[in-house]
Length: 513
Image (tube, rainbow, N blue to C red):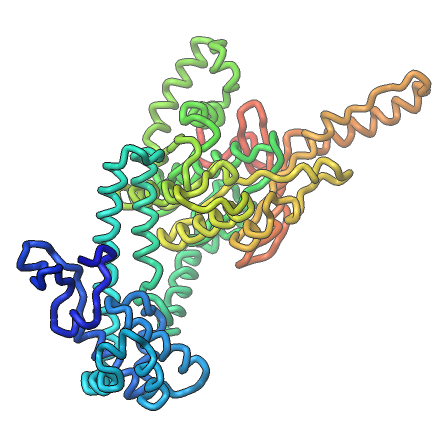
């Protein structure tokens, strides 16, 4: 028996697949054979050879490896090569191949070419025959996957854990489902226009406020139009700038808006916290909403009144549709699997990943360097946003190059592994707090410095500190659908709270003050 499950043309031509050494069909021995349809393959190839326009109906999704009969795959690939060159793939141009290919020679050579032409279907039916061939290919791949899963699970020498094996299998299934999807392609322009009109109608019904998911920050919403489905948004900054705090504020505001509007606005939020535990993240949200220092909460320094306030508000905010996964070092395939599950169960509407550089490579992926890994991760996040039709916010670290400049406002080139991140992102935002750098640049009087000269420096420093105290900038450096600009926000570090500048005393509408 052929152990690699290859279906031989000579055997397939007799309407069976593999035969054992005794010449008996495997089916007769109770062994199931791989699914394939020899007649469909011959009919499609005959249609292409008869009229090359049939190739156009299958070329987008069908590949040579999808044919069960290897010789048929080689014929199909030869037809593709000739057609791509602008040549005709017909009896004349294909005849030399049937005289030289050993498998085709044993099947009858040019006589088999005539048999294919005699099996031809019409152009109209060629697309359907292509889909049959592709569907059977998927079934064979599923069988191989099942065998691999069983064999790997039995193998005591396999070093990957069961969870990693599951994630690898899920990644393979996802790739299999999307690699040659024939349901994509062009759609009628009328449908595209209607989709765009519906988006504009949504914004119009909100009095022009926004069409996407709210961030809870009016100025940022005005610039972005909210967070749009299928968009990958990168929020980047140096350590201690407040990336996690801003992402947490936005996530909570979106969930709060969804809860208060009965699901009409905002979003159900999935938060992948690869750096902080779910408890730490929840403590930040409590601190921001109750306006009590998380440091006091952690050290048990709350008064009785503060604790009662904390308990009361925690009972309110725990109803928000926000889900936290704090599993460390998740792979992009694991994130995809868990996000899909949340989409099915709770209609997930937004994803936050904190942060991008902590996502690990997919199990089984080749070690091509960190830059290539990040490229795979950003492509995966963008694909996830499109697949689930939700905005994905991914936090990212900036390189140390920022610290070497006098002007420490970040730029696109400061992104670590910036090429793929900048390319795949629909929006790139930087968070910058000048107060952070000024605090560390407080003037110190030198031994030989005059008092009045130092006093002048001190006064200028205090003036600058007053201008930027409790503020932050969100620099939108790339926006695929709109302008770039800078939004100033209020930032109260004690409570890890961001708000619009003019309303920072009250915070996000509906918040707990």
